[in-house]
Image (cartoon, rainbow over all chains, first blue to last red; front, side, top):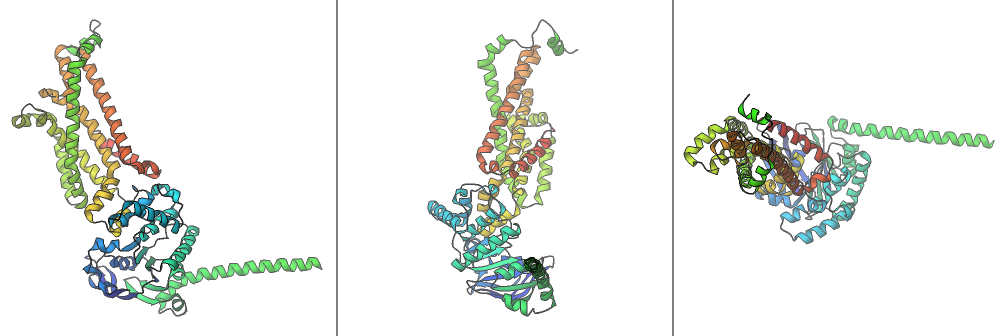
Length: 270
Length: 247
């Protein structure tokens, strides 16, 4: 369980990125932080591994204040995946994946062997192991990013818009595999996105943030869609409802077209 | 017409006398070449030793950078001969008198190349390193410096080639490597040593540049892997070459 209690992040210039946040993130589930840009969702994520420290309030993992843990040690125990994958261009794929085990001083040969196993797990061909990141496609790089975050088997994974830099078809594939992987691993995942469809698709729980760093609603996807807490949440969901409606109409059109041919067939039979 | 051009133009004295080259190759020319190598490479190494910590500091504390840049540029603007004359009072007629000013000159190319090299590390890569749990020192040594190599090496190549040509100025105080051949030729109105000196210096510059390029390739195998990286590196080299080509 990750607990935010009265957390505020104020920058020296006076900007408030996160405003008095209370949030409980359950163990073993996917919690999605969603909202427009500038709503403090990434700042919230980064307060978990101390890439940002709160101005007020506490962030605790299983009851332990993260401020009591030295940042590098804390971070080695938390997987992190970012948008452009952030792979190290000068290291081979297998060494990128084994980054954290290397930092922890694990045996190099074993760490590389485990990295190769992880490649299978995230759907990467082992023949890519000795290539450099620049030789991989965007989708492949993102898989390496996920494998790297998993390498030291951390109980918590932070994912900051991990699938938004790839095209929609690749994204759908990555999301599907991510859900399959999570069903096996049951990590505590905190997932940041600005895409409400992705949030609804992946999240067990969704935290909707509003501009100014306040939490607008924290609920399961069902609750969120059936009972939006206020106009802001309704508007934010609105975009995605529109798209669904469009799809619905397209399906209707297709059915009508199908019905038309049936009539034609019937007419021909006569 | 000056005496030298008269000699160069005259029928009696050929531009190159092969017998002179043959007689002096083993002794004078080889010795001049050895001296030239020491006088051009030592300052680059010294310069790198100073530029690395200085550049790292400038990349970290950006407010320091303009001051350091101004200082190295002023140093670069001081004529070599003036520095030699000042230094002779302290170090006498030794290699140090030539090496110290040349090392100082390299800073105006090497410090910016270290800073630019560190700034060329993509922000998301640096952030990923922080998030993985690299401490500041490990991040610098294992991630940032290796990724800065292409830009730093481009600076090293400019500094080296520029130094190889600058060393000859040392012949004004009698320590000039292959530059000594110029003074010999001028004093005796004898063109052969001058031609030998020019050809040797150009050849040395070309060979050194190719060697450094080879070292760079060996140090950065990932650069050849991607297509995007190589283009970016070439662009950076171009800017550095134009910046360093002034002198």
